[in-house]
Amino acid sequence: IVSAASDAEGVFRLPLGPDREEAVREQLGRFWPDCNEAFLQTLTSWISKAEEDSAGNEEVRGMADVLRRVLQIFAAESLRRDFKTELDMPDASGEMQLAKEADDGVLSLLATNPDMWRAETQRLVAEESLTGDALLSAVQMRVQMVVLQQANGSTRQRVQAEFLRELMTQVQDVAPTSAQREDILQREMRDLDASKDSAEDDA
Image (tube, rainbow, N blue to C red; front, side, top):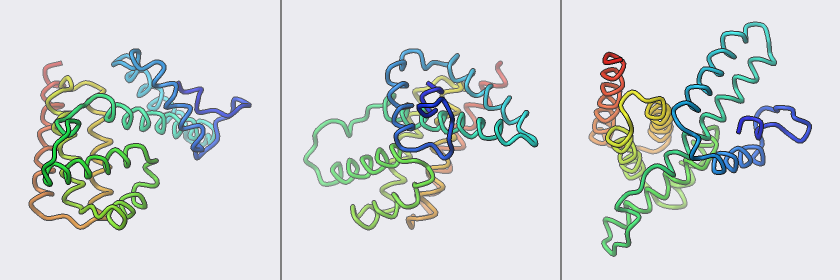
């Protein structure tokens, strides 16, 4: 999976081009049943080791960046693959349709390189007429799923939570949101952090 990020000569070039990111997604899909806790623990340990060894070594620092991007791609793919919601069911109500459009917007963000989240959020607000509250409500739904459906304290839960936290921050920076919606999201993230801390204490 990681090697898919390299070019035809086997060289990792940063930033990863769209073709290399798509190649990583294809390999993730191919090996998805094996993208389990052991896979994530191995990947995160590689990142930690590369970061430790990166002082004064640009090549190793670059490898850490590659591994982090692979982890981001995994996080986005897992948030798209792991969860199904009632929004996947047809519904004629205007409220449900609005929620579906906002969820589609979040799915679009998940498929976008995080470096382009601000531009994509601006596009969703300007061209798709989505509000910050609508987008954050859709993010909140996925936060709830991570809290309720993933094993407490698991690496998968932590990776997804960190990815959603960064996405939430980017959306809030670009799209105006109500204080009430931000309070709800902050409460959801605190619940997620509490479940992670509880699992670590039990361990």
